Length: 459
Image 1: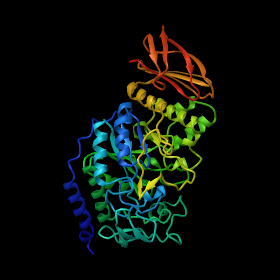
Image 2 (image 1 turned 45 degrees about the vertical axis):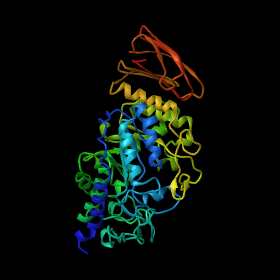
Image 3 (image 1 turned 30 degrees about the vertical axis):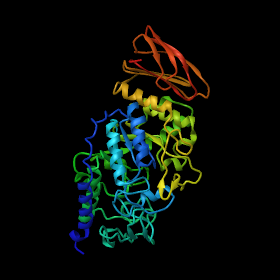
Image 4 (image 1 turned 120 degrees about the vertical axis):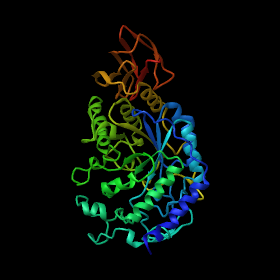
């Protein structure tokens, strides 16, 4: 089969789908660099749309990171979303039309949409039928890929990665049996670009590049460089000190998630301090390329990072992240689980709608949403007047914002100088708390347990 004959069915289907879809809404004005994002893990598309309209937009959140949209293997586990079998926009999270409408609704709310692009690999099982009816075998995806389009590294007995310090294995062998695409092949690149452009035609503003470290930076650069327009690119490159591939290798075409920063933040807060958190960096990744986070769907299933099960400490970590000036914060909302493989509740292969507050899903808390709003209001104002009187840290963001954070388990008093104008203020992190008075450049009050007092010059 020639390269062109192999990819033409997919390209034709993509073009037909795009031509039949209503025109994507123009994206909102670019979110300022300081605006936070949020990962809504395994939220169905109608639920994402509702979150954009009711919660994210009104609280100044700049973008939403989705779970993968393409067709995947069937099953109740969360990781089935990360085993694609085609590039049809049809999954347990919704249909193509629901996806298009969600993007439109989010744009209408001023929220940009970042898709999770699984382009390193396909499925990790021998054969089956995807959730939209596409039949496949491990190395055969009719009309898309054949065996020659995958790496067969021959470096380990089962072709799986065995030694992560070996770059050849890391980028040419399989990640836990997932059929590893040879992204150096022109037809593979062209097919992936067609998929990403299809998402762009539906209004998507950017992409999280899943498992980016398992593809060479040159391959990823060639693929994203061929995508229409200038989408936001955030690569998943987990920092490990003994590995040859590092996040800095992927900065030439976008940003990266700050895994090292997240792990270090957990160490600072678990150690009972706050002040060092504002000095943390992720290696040599500059602030404008770093996407900071406390937890994501992978790290919440491990112990090195904080996760929602840490409850008050997790909330404090997200408040601390929002208060800082390094990177772009990405908040996290997923669902509760006892089995690390378990996915959210489904009915007939579809994830059930999420209505906050909801028992299984851990929705964003009022404190975190208020702090996201505070961050959007203080903008890029510099951090000033930092004072650490354990267990309370206070700071200004220029003359626009004042913040007091406490790591204590009980309310703690504070008194500090501030550049805020004299007057009475309300706490954006707890909207029912007002009566904070600035007089002569001084302010005093009480910080709730493991929480914040966040004041803004607009009161």
